[in-house]
Length: 320
Image 1 (spheres, helix red, strand yellow):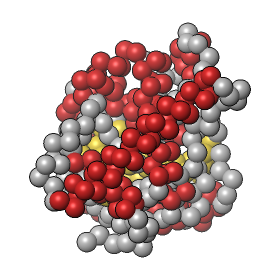
Image 2 (cartoon, helix red, strand yellow):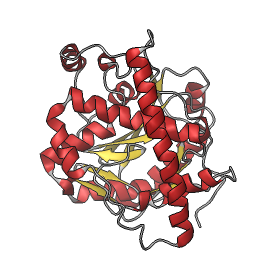
Image 3 (cartoon, one colour):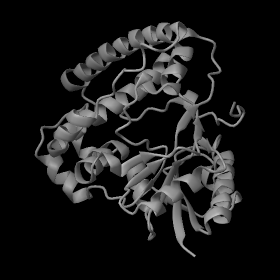
């Protein structure tokens, strides 16, 4: 029987972890019944200060601890197998999601990454911005181009990230910067891996499955939107400087096309205008904050503030 490693990386996820692990366990059982696979389950607790470890163990999942951020935690979860499944701890999966990922990876050995569709649950806040952010995530920015994969849940053939020594050498070649903090190492894995995999294996090496899906909570406030925006843009700019050899593939394939907006209903086009206005504010705030840390502040920027509204578990809303 083929064994597939599945790793859940959790950082202070006591509110959502139990139901996430429950849905993943059911999905693994479904895949075992359908495909005859076994699963090597593991939770990696990333410097947790709540009851994440105890909850994982009470759910029957082995636990190891890690420090140093999400990428270091992911690396702790790499084990032998034809591929590895990685999942965040604040989502819920449909019963056939793991089956769909495994089928795709087993059917095509040249496939490097498979990911399921992801669906945001309806927002709890009844604000114009919460509605606009929900539609943005639901419609994927009204874009049909899906070049990069999502790091929320994915199957990957080989999870390979730059070593600490490689990162140190690259950081030392760059000037000190209190905003980007090049010496901090890799903070996000899917941006770097998407660039490298597309460069080395082509666009067809990353696919989204046609069935199975995950449910998650998207940001619902401007603070949450800005923190997500800052994380993404900061890491994109850090990667451009740390790994300039990956710039070309991002310029060629990394842009999203708003080519579905014209055919969207009028209410969605209006919501898009709200989103665009908030996005312009994010860009201004990002410029100001970067200037502050680079020119004024004597302390480094906190690169990973918590987005509280995304930490609530998405299990109270069922698929429609």
